[in-house]
Image 1 (cartoon, rainbow, N blue to C red):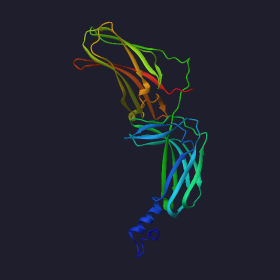
Image 2 (image 1 turned 30 degrees about the horizontal axis):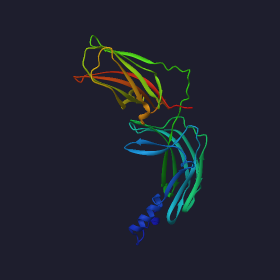
Image 3 (image 1 turned 120 degrees about the vertical axis):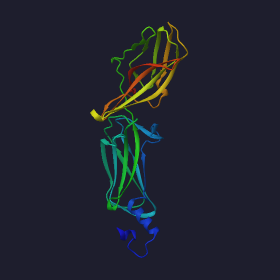
Image 4 (image 1 turned 135 degrees about the horizontal axis):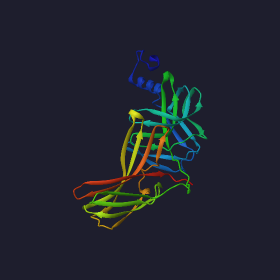
Length: 317
């Protein structure tokens, strides 16, 4: 190894070291993935950490195919110990830094040999199990990606990952119960409110409709808002963890209501791209639930609220 890097000789130079290290660790190799229908397939912009990322969108039963390329710039000949492509589905936890793979397939693209210039390899993953929807949450992440690996000598390797998005849909079942929600909230002799939402299940492009009835108002209400709360849960027992996040807020009323007044609710879910379907015990790792949170604030900034769980889904054909 030292001889290959020129360390043991009398003519060792930084240029030789850089060249040898690049050859050994694959720094000079450029790699990429192109999906076969990238020009016509829909893509979505998602928030990953502190940045926005554009990802191609696939369904649970879609075939993943295309071409990968591996370049050795400057016309140098590079030896490798094999080239492989993996399709991986995994769940990542920020809290305990665990990674759980639930889908993993491998395609051996090339046996050990040499690279000179550009080499391209077609690939196809048909009938791949993609049972869960992609998710980038508060502490949990579920993603699908292709991992291209060029193995080098002495255990070194060059790796490129290409993430893609998977959406799962729920077929519409008209016979399934989707009853209206009716509840009351109040303070004895001070406030009595009835409110209702037209459904308990909503697809992500739907409109939440409802009404709020003021039956008794003896405190001065300053304003009222409706919020969508996302609650992400992971772990079990002593390691269970739950975190809530306000996905959206919608001001229903600004000013004091009077007895007998009815305030309509109309909340367009399509305006909130960060909404996901409700997830229940995904691979025994995490769940995501949503709540409509009605909040009233009086002139002394005291807050009165009532939460109601709702079920969100991605509408299928």
